[in-house]
Amino acid sequence: MGGAERHIGVAERRARLAVRHRLAGPARAAGPEEVADSLVALHGSDPATVHLAVGARLADPAKTVPETERALYTDRTLVRMHGMRHTVFVFPADLTAVVHASTGLTVAARERAALLKDMATAGAPDAAWLAEVETSALAALARRGQATAAELAADEPRLREQFAYAAGRSYEGVHTVSTRLLRVLGVEGKVVRGRPLGSWTSSQFRWAVAPEHPETDPAEARAVLLNRWLATCGPATEGDLQWWTGWRVTEVRRTLAAVGARPVSLDDGTTGYVAADDLAPVVAPPEPWAALLPGLDPTAMAWRQRDWYLAPELRPPLFDRSGNVGPTVWWNGRVVGGWAQRADREIVWRFLDPGVRRDAEEAVADAAARLRGWLGTTKVTPRFRTPLERELSG
Figure 1 (cartoon, rainbow, N blue to C red):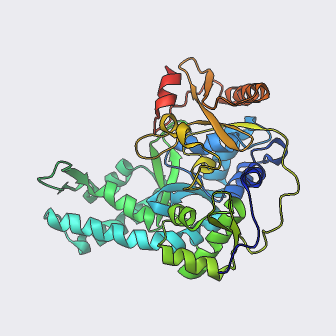
Figure 2: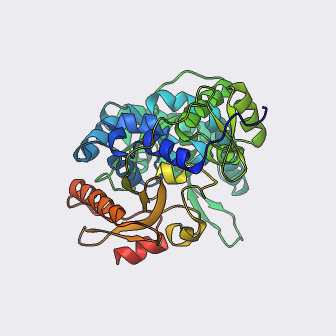
Figure 3: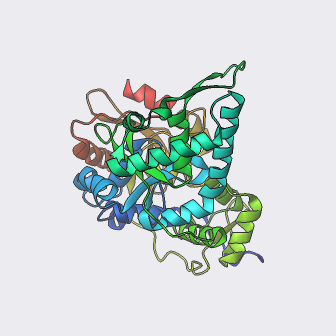
């Protein structure tokens, strides 16, 4: 793809992040649709992450809960579904077909094959039986509009069928058809996550039939997704792109060439890529800003190579053993600490970077007050807990 056409240093990358991820004050969004569109995808494995990520970026954070719920469950302008790397995300509705074709099809085929193999190994009913159950369950879901797995099993009792998994191994167990089948249907783009059971922090949810979308050519879909992501997160390395999308390196390189991505040099000596029309420098860095971002926030998790915004020595207290980031404190485009919510609902934080200045303390205190204000009496505990979050929360 040729040599680097210009250099993009750490300072410019942090300035891009501040504006394009809507974290600097003037760049904040009017609604959750703007946030999701700017970030391409919001991590949805932890339901609270979606709301917390939106709230950190809204000009008026008091609108966070009602507006996010409107977008997710009333207008359906945002859709919570399986996406890259078999992870649950929240996407703008116009990206559902793109995500399904570019990342979901390959994973879906693998997931269905694994389910059929596990059932056959356990002596459970065959593929024809499963197809009947699937058709019946989808029809029941369409009638109900939204339903839990238990409600669907009341309509289609065969969903309660159980089978042994990994017999004789240390992780052996018993799986229920409903659990595995609904997961497969989610990856296949046939069902999506619906309203939670309880408040917006609940990890229990209903299922809904996925919105209809046109079939899209996988290569074309990869080009659309990569272009959208580069506009938000460029410059990014091949490693960043492969990690975020879950594609093979050959697919990454082919798609970079297809969209005409432009190579740039980075401060660590590696090559990054930006969208074809994105070589112009950022006009001016934003004013100093601070943010309290939740665990699994898309900004903290967007890149595989993170040294330009997260010092390696800060990682152990901020990540769990599986590589999930916890709540982070940001100052001018870099992670400087972590935060948590105590049982009394107060927001507490700790700087891990000894070089943080006094003005950062004031800005972080303001960000904490904003967060505490819109959370009100709600208590949020991250699904993936990290050492510093556990310590601070008490």
